[in-house]
Image 1 (tube, rainbow, N blue to C red):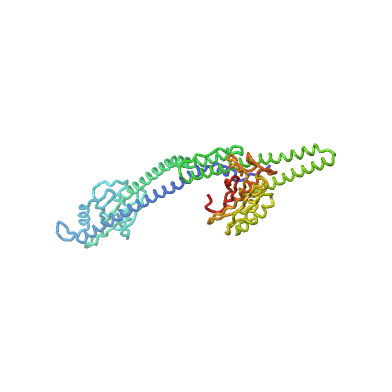
Image 2: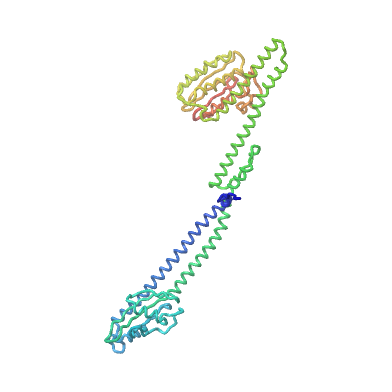
Length: 486
């Protein structure tokens, strides 16, 4: 029986388990490791190049000095130019002070196939096999047609330069050889390279500890955000993240806290809205059910019951329509602004409001300006304010409608001459399903959504609805739109 195995299932969970802190640290270590190794390698290359330049300089210097001595030097015994190659080489070697890793050798040929005779400085060379003890290497250098070269030996590399001595009489050819053993200096460079690598390793270890601590400190608010998000529920939105500093992480924490504030307010408003809506809808449902259960066979009683039930169903329909309107107020297309003549709009509102009740309707003033607003929504809000004024005044009392403008700021208002709004009610009457504690006149069948709709329309226009006292008594509701409103 064969079972299928999906490749990559082991690596994927491991990748998912790597936290942001670990990934940041791994990337930091990778970048640092590449950087430190690059620095160490570059340093080693520069040092080895310096060794090569120094060795080449020493070889060229020694070869140049011998060539100059060969041309201009004189035999101290005769006071004349050297005629003996052996004596020339001896005199030159006696006068030179070579570096510890440098060998100066004079070679005089003894015939084909035989190692040349050597003239050397009697001193210790700090290498395993000096050149003057390596006949094979000596022969290769002596026979080479090149003036410089390198000999690779198991015992170590040799850099050399050679100056051929001119023939004197019938004497065999001779040569001066300067050789340098770069092994010790190369070993010193390699040792420095290893020290740099060790220091880099220690630096990586320190960076690991410091990077782990710093990454943890930087990402702490992010972890708090994740923990807070995991602990949030619809019933508990009170958790907040401590904000420290003024960097991007602090800004993230502040933004998350602001989001939680908005969510908490939204959920609280939603719960309150659902509770209030349920309460308001429960009352007409109870009335309808009660009347239907008690309805008898008497035609007059049945007619009265049907009238009451129909009235309550109409009330429920108005509540539902108002709720849908308030829900739509959250959408960006709730209002459609267009250029409107404010004087014409105010007059239209006045004409429509006069049919709401027997009041002393007055068109107080109009603003002869053009404004960008949604005429249908503004008319809806103003008619709602006029209906509110009718409900809180008696027949014959004055209700004034008007508009005014000051630059880009405009106001439309409805002022009644009723008893006004109590101070404790001023902050709540614009909330959904909230009514004032003291009212005069017919209450009507409203559910407490009218002023909430007015506020939603004003805020959709970038304005506010305000409550002011009317001179002589009463209340004035103002739609303050545009800039510069107090």
